[in-house]
Every structure is written in structure tokens, then in C-alpha cells.
Image 1: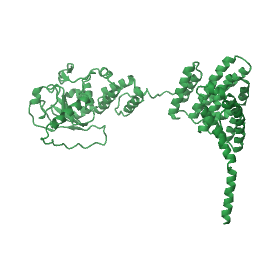
Image 2: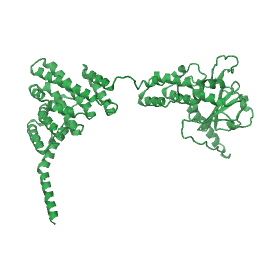
Image 3: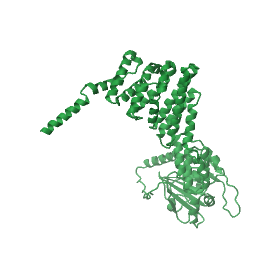
Image 4: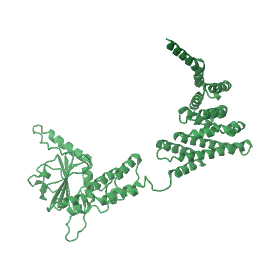
Length: 520
């Protein structure tokens, strides 16, 4: 048992002596933990089981439920209670003199038998009592002081103003969190609440904040907000709890803005500029591992947002970055064809190709990659230069073509028929030539996915174009084997469309059937 010493008061004020109170291991003035309550309840039930012959005690009528669970209904008992009153039933008491417990007293509303009763404080020095009636069948009785309650709580000040008696008794029924109520009232006796709160976790402080608002304990509310503003929030779930609790606060004159500034900003800097800066930093990184990791993180975050809260004109920034990368690739190809710094050019081409592929991933996630497919299909100079470079210098660029075919096959982008045909005409053969190197030189290359995307893209074209492209593929495949994409599934689909009851025959049969039906 510990004591909280109250400073000496001025003449005319209520004299408050040292009040024995229960203290948690963290140093809080509070009632026992919920586990202690449960143990007390279990012991109470076991005592009842040992007396089967005794009739069950009469049940009190349940109080009418309020529509809102956060509203506290306070019931003021009779006008005056003697300071030395006690229950006629046995109490599990803390720091209450035995002589006080043994004095018989006539029962009033606030002294009706409860399943479990716990008392705090020293009745001999108090001039008020607060009774917390829990839903689990126990009640907590606090011997407190009017001046402390009035000075710190607008709720208690209002209720005590209605009392004209020397000794007041306030009862709070249907108390959902009696432990935190006791703890919060105990904080009214605490000089340095910040030090007390530092020993608690975020979840418990949120509970204290809720009760402090209900009691109108403004200094405690501000101390909780100061704590929440400074302490780290661990995980998204805890962050969501903090923000939702702060937004529900209705108390005026408390500063919630410092806490909310952690997740919201009043800065005028548009999201587009911030995202553009991030994209630029990632693309221009010189460290391969860090660049790869940040590309993965940014893409994941954009995917989680799914376009929400991202500026609509952000696509313009991506297209601008794509154009810069394309210009860089074209310049590098020209330099490589001229034989200037071949090793440096090869490494930089690989970096720019990876950048383009990542930007295409971002556009595909935002369903905005059609314009890029048009731009890439029209890169005829780049395609011509591609043939002149060694395989190890050029093959990375075919990753961009592969990603476009995968996107079309998945339906992530829907370019026009002319764009699809131009894309296949310009870049399919270079992809065939680089395919073997892509399979063995790129860790992230998925051949099955690329083959499926190419086949589906071809099958979206008119049947004549399908035939032209697939026959060209057949020659490459028969000569290259595993070094060429396997488009056999697309070839089978085209074959069935062309030779096994073609659509023209079915249409003709349908018209003949219609004619015969009309004659009948």
C-alpha cells in the first residue's frame, strides 16, 4: 500500500490528509487489474456453490440500457450519508479500518449488497464518496474529496453543485471500465501526470483519455494528448486506434492538432511534386540494390492505394520520366553503334531498360499504359539500332517489349488494333532474337508469362494478321527451338479458327438455315 501526499492547503480550504491508495506496479493510483476482479468473482461464485441449501439472492431489476455505450448515467443517492457507514454484507476492502466495517448502519440505495465490493481511500479524511457500479456484478467505492473533484472535473463539479449536504455520494452505474475510472480519478491527486503516463502503453492511455473526456478532466486530456504526440505508434492497427480516438474527442480547448500532424499535413506542396521527386530519386540512384528495393516498395504502395489520393496528373510525371529514359536509351544505342565506351554503355542500357520496365509497371497499375504502348511501337530507329548491337548489350531492352505483351494479355492496357499490330511488327522479331539471353540473363524474366502474353496479343488481331505473324514465328521456332518463344497454344487457336469449321462456313450455314425456315 502506498500513499499520495497532498500539499498543505490554505486556510478555509478543505483539509486533505494523506490518503492510503492502491498503486499499480507502474505507479498508478488505481484499482486491481481485471484479473484480480475475475479472481474475486470466482471466489464469490465458489462460496455460493458451497451453500446449495440457501435460496438464491433476489435479483435487482436491470437498469434500462442507453442507446449510446459511451454515455455515463450518473445517479445521485440520498442527500446525506454518514462517513462511517458500511455494508451489512462482507466487503473485500482495501485500506479501510476494520472498525468502520463493523459498524451496523441502515441500508440505503448506495449500500445495497453487491456481489463484490472494493473500497479505496480513507473514509475518515474524505468528505465525498464515488461509487462505480460495474456490469460484472461488482462495485468500487472511492473515498475522495470534493475540492479535488471540483477543481479537476467539470462532470463532478456540476453534480456536486446540486448537493447541499456536507458529505456527498455520487454513483456511476453501468461503468464499462471501472479500473480506468479509478485510475483517472487517482490522477486528480497526481502533480506530474506526464511522468505517470510515461510508464503506460498507448492502449491504456487511450482508455484513460476516453474516461477523462467523460469526466471533463481537461488537464488529464491534454496530458494524454501530449503523450500520444510524443510516443511512437507501433503498427497500422495502433495508429488507427489513436487517430479514431482523437477524432472522436469533443472537448473544446484541447490541442489535437499536434497529434494529427503526424498523419496529415497542411503543407501546400502538391502530391504530384512529392511523387515526382520520389520517382526522380529512384530512377537516378547509382546503387543497384537500394534502387531495386525502393522500386519494389514504391510499386507496392501505389498498388495498395489503387489510385486513391494520388494526383490525376501524376501520370504526366511518369510519361515525362519514360520519355527521358527513352531519349537516354536512344542516345546510348547510338554511342554503342559508334563503338564509344561499350562496357559503360551496356551497363547504362541495362539500368535504363529496368527503369522503363518499372515505369511501365506503375502505369499498368494505374491503368494508364496505352499511351506508352503507342510511343514504344513507334520507336523504329531504336528497333533498327537494336539489330546492330551485340546481344549482351541490347537484350535488356526486350524486357520492355515483354512487359507490354504481358500487360495486353492480362487486359491491363487496351491499345487499338493498329497499335497492337505495329507493336508486333516492330518489336516481335527483336524479342525472338533476344529470347535466349532473356531466359538465362534476367532473374525476373518469366518465359511462360511472356509466351502467354504474346499469344493472346496475336489472337486479338484479325485472322489474316494472325496467320502472317504465326507463320513467321513458326519459321523462327523450327530453327531456334528453345531459344524462341513457344507460341503453340496460340497456333492451335489460330488453326481451329482457320481450318476447323471456319466462322465463314458457320455464318453461311446459319444463313441457309434461315432461308429454309423462311420458305417453310
